[in-house]
Amino acid sequence: GCKNNSTATNGATGSTILVGEYGSLTGAQASFGISTNDAIQLATDQINAKGGIKGKKVVVKVEDDMGQPAQAATDVNHLIDDGAIAILGEVASSCSLAGGRVCQQRHIPMISPSSTNTAVTELGDYIFRVCFIDPFQAAVVARFAHDGLHATRVAIFTNKDQAYSTGFSENFKKAFTAMGGQIVIEKSYSSTDTDFRGALTAIKQANPQAILIPGYYNDAGSIARQARALGITCPLLGGDGWDSQDLFKTGGSAVNGCYFSDHLSIDDPSPRVRAFVTAFEAKYHHKPDALAALGYDAANLLFNAMERAPSLKPEDIRNAIAATKNFPGVTGNITINAQRNADKPAVIIKVENGKFRLAATITNPYAP
Ligand code: PHE
Image (tube, rainbow, N blue to C red; front, side):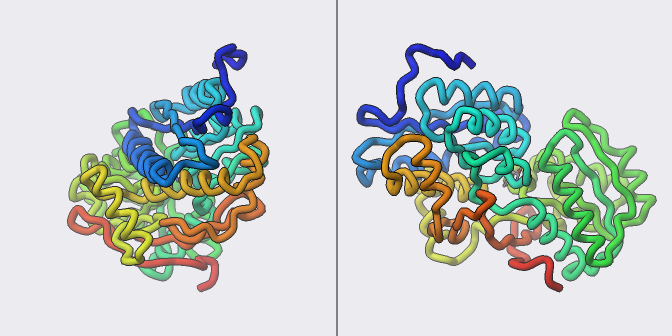
């Protein structure tokens, strides 16, 4: 990016506030970026309808990183050059790591709605998230495999190109073995792989009672299909990366009877979730997913922090985000902790006849 862009303006002067957003609007994780962007737009419409922030209208400028970390870094530089005083994004942890590095270096606060890899907020004091982290999420899946499925023998199949996937697998292994479970085999693949049959054949021979596949929905769907074709019938387990209606495009009926951890069930009867789902459906004519709920929470938490901040200097916004306590999010009450993460319960979703159903809510996976 061109950091010395002479046309760059401070995003808080004048009558508007410029917020930058980066995400995968195209590419293999497109549903993540689109869903998050839809929700951020909704939150922006709502805040502007209420008069904006400190009397200023909020403008969100979005850039498509195509799910590629190098592009994510370029996009974030562009957004800051354009005058963005805060950044929303990314979903995929590898992209948040690349974009977050830029925000930290340039001292512009960033809130990731949904990146769960621990390293993201460890980038520094300007980097926040509104979701839980993978040591917790992976322990939730381990607890469910152990107590809910009574599995003691689990195989792991990791996407070695995604920080999310490698971190998830590591954390699952730790948690599951601490519970007395055994990892019978570990295999990995690359984002560009399309034929998983070699690895799946080895996994089948290890005779697991469940297989952990902490990849994104597009990977998980095709792996599930090939696993079923090879005669693997055990449940497949995933994390929040499975949350997309596009899971059914690649997975079809092969993902039925599988489970994944997530941030919320969109069918949650609580008034906050219902109000969000109603507003989202009115604007977009389809149901939101967990990504949308987290995108909405990230945007609203940022807007709330900007309102509370003594000024719209990035440093003041940063401090206000860090001080957030009990913010009423759609995904739960959000308190930003000392590590700039949010502690929240997770749910286990069961895939059943092409639908997502709530199977369990887990607050403390460490206690039996
Ligand atoms: N947690 C995933 C990551 O860190 C992203 C994700 C969140 C995907 C929620 C789907 C739903 O990469």
